[in-house]
Amino acid sequence: MGFFKLTIRDVPIDHKTVLVRADYNVPLNKKGDISDDLRIKASLPTLQYLLDHHCKIVIISHLGRPEGRDKSRSLAPVAARLQKLIGTPVTFVEDCIGDVALQGVKQAPAGSIVLLENLRFYEEEEANDDVFAAKLAQASGARYFVQDGFGVVHRAHASTDAITNHIPSVAGLLIEREYQTITGAMEHPARPLVAVLGGAKISDKITVIEKLVKVADKIIVGGAMANTFLAYRGCEMGLSKCETGQEGVLDAVYDAARKKVGDAVDDFIILPTDVAVAKELSNSARRRVVAVDSIASDDISLDIGDASIQRMADEVADAKTVIWNGTMGIAEYAAFSHGSARLALALATQPQTTSIVGGGDTADFVLKWDGHEGASFSHISTGGGASLELMSGKKLPGIESLLNARK
Ligand code: ADP
Ligand code: 3PG
Ligand code: MG
Picture 1 (cartoon, rainbow, N blue to C red):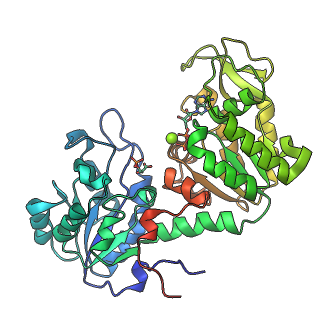
Picture 2 (picture 1 turned 90 degrees about the horizontal axis):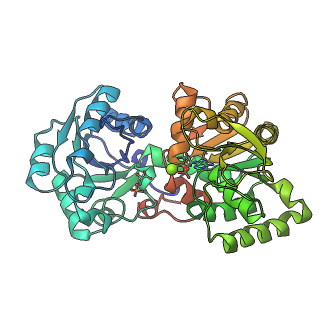
Picture 3 (picture 1 turned 30 degrees about the vertical axis):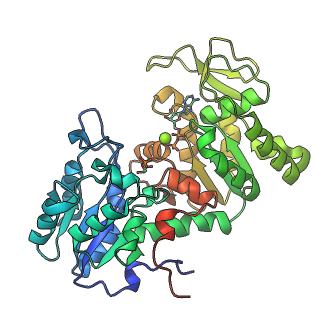
């Protein structure tokens, strides 16, 4: 099935100057080095296509949430990494609008790549300011705008929305691939479809839970999210991270689930029956597994327990599609990564199962676990919020604003 928006393949792009919005909001370590370049690598197919078609490429992106100009949030290290990965010179220009940007683009030779400085050094970017968007268009001198920053298309910002008022705007190959893969899995999944939800915040993920109650055959809950569910079901959770004020939301989730599966609700929304706890979170903390009805008042639940891990593995073994968002525990600590690692192993050893992994921390975990650029999984999304919003059926402003494909 074709994509519902025009892509770079649909327009006469040869020899044109093209403005590409990437999402190079990459994680940086304490030294300021890029600690994970998934998003840079994911942008390469579009850039290579444009190079093959002799385009001059001007790239814009944000990095972090700076307030004004902030050297620690400069995109300069990204330019260096991109140049290494793509093997074509990348010129970094220290502004994204105005004379500096204009001259930087002008002086770059045809068939080369220019990366402009962080869009969010200007507050107009997040304000979706139309005058700022016009300045971006003008500095780039671009004939086409290509949206390829999947991770940011759930935001209506100047570089995802207002810019499309100024330049004919089409999708890049990453946007097309993410959209088709994620909506395909939600709309026509090979069944059984098992959703595995974890991580920290229910409120961030609630719309997707509601949607998953409708489309999934099983929902497995882990991570701190499970703590909130367990507390709601009456378990004493000690000092575990729980979110309060979610009772109404969880009432609605369980009402919808009961409507769908009746009394089998605990076989549909599968909560841990045991958890791994410690008295403190540290590298030397010992993993101790307890039943969910035996959590002491000074215990912290940090991972799902061994029986729950086995149950999850059994459910996933039968699945034809698995959607995974949110780690099963504090996977940053080896002792509390067992649940997440066991799930990664199940997916890696079931190549016939379509596996879609989303969420910044979850993608980070599976990439480090995998060590093969994520080849063990069908799709590792570059989007956190964007992939969740797409799964929950919301329209994404950065995609909606692009030119429609001809029917
Ligand atoms: P993603 O970025 O993949 O969408 P989230 O940001 O929602 O996922 O959640 C990931 C975070 O959740 C990780 O930093 C992890 O340490 C944390 N987390 C997972 N399980 C627990 C737990 N039991 N208690 C506290 N934090 C947890
Ligand atoms: C992300 O990392 O989720 C995207 O780059 C969007 O960043 P934001 O949450 O700061 O808008
Ligand atoms: Mg996260």
